[in-house]
Length: 231
Image (tube, rainbow, N blue to C red; front, side, top):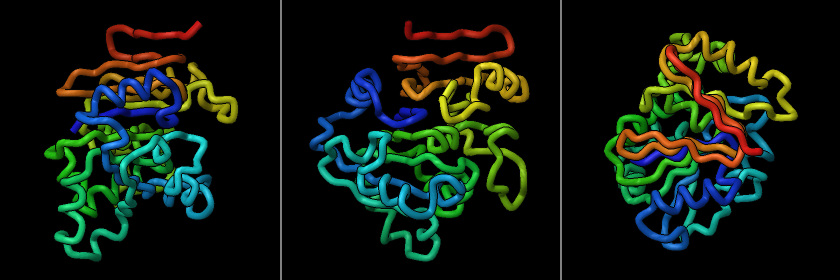
């Protein structure tokens, strides 16, 4: 599984080119499944109009509307109620997963409950996350991002990468997402932590991590901090 962890989708040339290098064929020949589940756990984005916008490719965040050969919907909350042979073959044949934003812990819960979390590491596919869809891959999200409360509490996510993500850095509609806020968040996290704006993504292939950005980002760690800025 190759990961492209974005803050706001495939919304600039650099991120789209990175996605192209991760696929083994053109986008027009690639099949995709979109996963809107995280949206239902967040009061700002679901259920309702925004969920439909994401699924139908009418969202302001480019993911579903990139020109895929086909796009289907994989709703994780439905999977535990149907036989695995109804959906596992579809998942194994899919080239790309397009995972929406919303609530990361709600998404983590349903990835585990559905069984998708167990399948992901073995798949030969590209996982494209947006916001919560990216954060869910981290070991934890931090108390600042706990909205929906898991049955067992805490802020643990899936731990499929060894770093955490603070998305939407310096977003004009999120006054609590400044670099100073990201620094305070990072101090409470164990291990590396990235703050990324909506023009930035993190590419992970075979354990190698690369930041793809036309904007601003910063890596926090126990020993040093790296940053990138688009002038």
